[in-house]
Image (cartoon, rainbow, N blue to C red; front, side):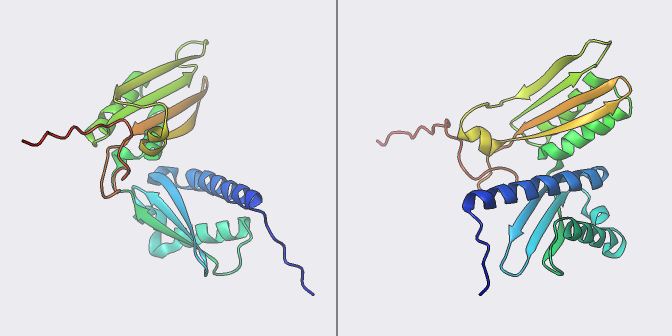
Length: 217
């Protein structure tokens, strides 16, 4: 008589969360230079599908699909998936300006290249706002100038901080920049616009937006 290992819902949620976090960290390290902008995991009865969003999906696929096959083999070995039970796909990010992951990576590379902090941050904010975002906020902390650590905050537009709308409309990403004077932390928050089709922003209407209907005659 075979014993079936039943997994509780609590343990299942924990396992799924750990899998997503480790997978996101791995892909972030491997695909940072190719504009990695997030990952989506879809579980089907036949296999697990991993959709990688990037601004340059051709580089993610590699020459004749070589890189994506290497990534698939690495993920399959790391998480002990059976043969042909997991598959990776690459998908182009519709708007690079509205991706907090891509903008955080861009800011990280600019700081590593020696660009002054203020110039790099204002350049990122300008590109995000020109891309159609409703608001943008950048927080940089660490040894920016001198030996004393401090935090600098740059923001533009409209940004909500609490409620369900903040979970629906605001995306945030954190990066750590290893400079000669120490580690600098970078947080990029972008408030997305409302999109009825759900492509560039959430479908759900913001909670505090009130539409006044004109009275009938």
